[in-house]
Image (cartoon, rainbow, N blue to C red; front, side, top):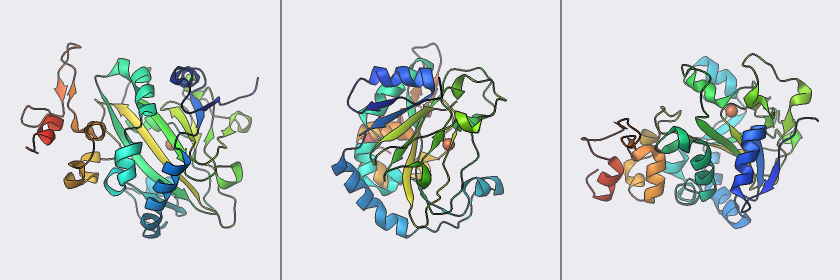
Length: 284
Ligand SMILES: [Fe+2]
């Protein structure tokens, strides 16, 4: 049997999505953002993207090479988009997946990074990679620590640079390289998402069109005891954090990771208290 990525409808059984992730390492979920939410989110992003240059500098030359100079990014989305902060960040679909897959390995999970990636004409395929390799010091084998996704904000097709995924690669030996026939382009209508494990090999695809942009958003979650890729506390202005739903505050990392019940300790406290409570009490 050739490589395949299961395709499911949002609003159906989340257990089937979880099973698909465990079995194949990736699942396409259609209709995750309904058309009305998608339209409002895109309208909010339009002026933000106009201010972004694809030719920017990054933390170091390796990141610069990875992203190239044809990609427009919006980072710290929670601080810039009300719709993201109020409706997408705390979307119950992600909660169900994180509860099932990350839940057994942590007391709470958190947003790792949300980043709009508008890949322009000529953007070449990224290096195939596993997102969890940012935590290269984490000993292996280890339980899944990350649930990642790319939400299609326009229709994704292969020629536009739909994310390519190597189904089953979460089970592969570390050194195994994906052959071309083992890669699947996550073609899907706007509002869908390809959800994958941190251990699944994938890459942003080549945008071979002459003039079309592949607007998508990477959104990933991680166990609450690992350092996040984006520094979400600093990327989201505190005055914005105050106005977000409590669940979104928790997912941005303002909830202490309290593992006392599990025989551990707590992480992320402020003055030995839980920051999300301090926010609620107006003390932060
Ligand atoms: Fe990635």
